[in-house]
Image (cartoon, rainbow, N blue to C red; front, top):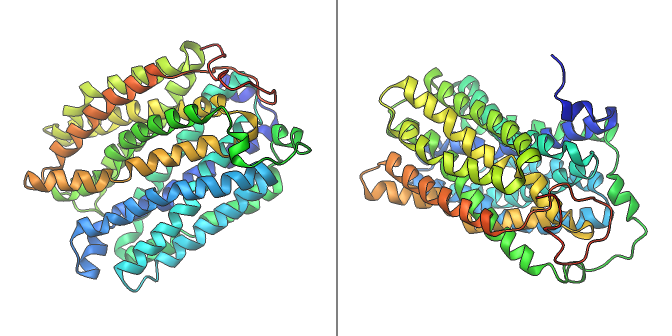
Length: 418
C-alpha cells in the first residue's frame, strides 16, 4: 500500500520521529483507559460505589496540568527528546505500581501521580513531531498523532477482552508497564527537534518572560481545550460502564469488545480525515464541521435499537469527536511561539483537562438521578459540548502554515493562511 502524500514528503528520520510521537501518545492513552474498563471490578474488590472509583479518572485528569507545565518547561530548556524518554519511563512505572495498590486510597493517589507523568507526554511529543516535519505535512500528521489516543483506547479494550478473566484488573496494570520499552526505540532512532536545536544558544527565560504578551492566547486555548476534553472524555470514559450497566453486555465479552473496536476505528478514521481536511479548508472550519456533525449521530450512538445500529453509532460519533481532535496538535503548535512550544500547547491542553476533569463523575451523577440512565447523561452532555466547542473555535485565531523557527510578535497567532 502506498504511503499517503503527507508521509511521502518526510525523510526516513522524520518518519521515525512521527512514529515515536504517535506511539508515545498511544501507549499513554492505553495506560489511562485500562482503569475505565475495570471500574466495576475495582469497586467490587474494595467494597465501594463505582462513583468513588471514577475519582481515579478525575484525579488523573486534574494532575495532568502539573506534568504539562513541569515537563514542558524541562523540554523547552533541555530538549524534547531526553525529557520525553524520562516521562515515558515514569508513567509506565506508576502504572505498574497501581497493580499493587492495597486500598482504593492508595490507588487514587497513584492515579494522581500517573496523571502528572501523563500530562507531560502530549505536549512534548506533539512539539517534537511538528517541529521536525514540513509545514504542508502538518494536517495529516496532526490527525495521525491524535489518532494515537483512540488507538490506545483500542489496545486497552483488546487487552481487557483477552486477559482480564485470566489475570484480573491488577494484572492489566502490570501489562501497562510495557510502554517503557518505547524509550529504547526513541533513543536509537529519534533525533532532537531541529527548531529546538536552533534555539539552543538562546538565553534561558522564565516561563513568565517567555509568555509575555501571550496570556490572552493561553486563556483562550485553555477554554477551548476544556471543551475539547469534555467532548472526548464525555464520549469515551463512561462508555464501557454504559455497555455493562445499561446494555447488560459483560465487560469481557466479544460484543463489548466489538462495540469498543468500532468506536476506536471511527476515531482513527475521523482523526486522519479531518486532520488532512484542515490542510485544505483551514483548522477552524474542520473543527467546527466535525463538532456539529456529531449532534445528528447522538441518537444512533446511545439509543440504537440493535447491536448493528449501536455499532454504527459508536463508529460515527468518534469519527466526529476525534475528527475535531485530529486538528488539535497542529492547531495548538502553530499558535504557540517557539520559546514555549514545549510548554504552551501541552499546558493549555491539560489545564483544559483540569476544567473538564469532572466529566465522568458528573455524567455518573446525572445518570444516577435518572435511575442509571447513562444514555441520557452522555447524549445530553455531548450535544451541549458540541455546540460550545464550535462556538469557541469560531471565535478564536488560526495560524495555518506558519513557519517555525522564526520569531513572532505577540498577537501574530492568526497570521497564517487560515
